[in-house]
Image 1: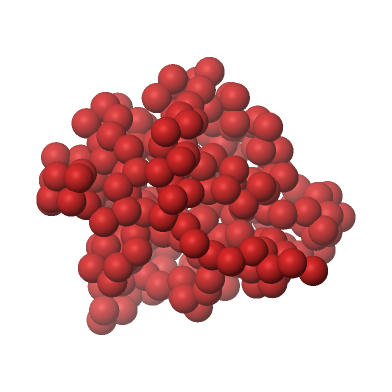
Image 2: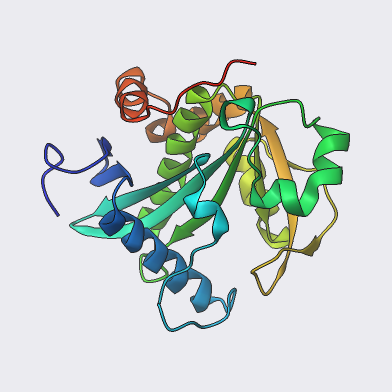
Length: 227
């Protein structure tokens, strides 16, 4: 891996990790391979010949994919999907799968950040794995701020909801149901963006830093549509 001064999409360094916004085919492919490895390790998706896990949302303008590196190798990744007038209300996986629940509990008029494809290399274990999970949500708070989202939503297996509640106050807003592309059922969780303070109180390294956000925003040049 190049030094962060040369890294495409460099965001921040923390506790030995380097965060990256993927803007080129090479880094995106690494993220897709990491997704595939993580999901196959729990039989979450069918096997394929490409060794990558991608979907139709990856090519949308409301999608952003990120990587975390540790000691020269990619170890974790997360994607932001934004439900917003800024992107002409392009859909997200959870808006498609859980639309009635979102409309009833949050309201589809609100800008939403969907955090998904949240994966850590299954060989990357122990305390460092937990640190990586918190840093992925530090990235998501920057993404949420950039698009002025009112809520963060994420679809998870029911057994994982306790972790998300501790992480950032997530609460369930749907029943458990199948999600297209996965071999397991999931439920939708949500939390207001203002709950980001819970991240920093749980782990100081997960707190949003202004200089990180300014760097992140500098990479993004999506035009704002005026209606």
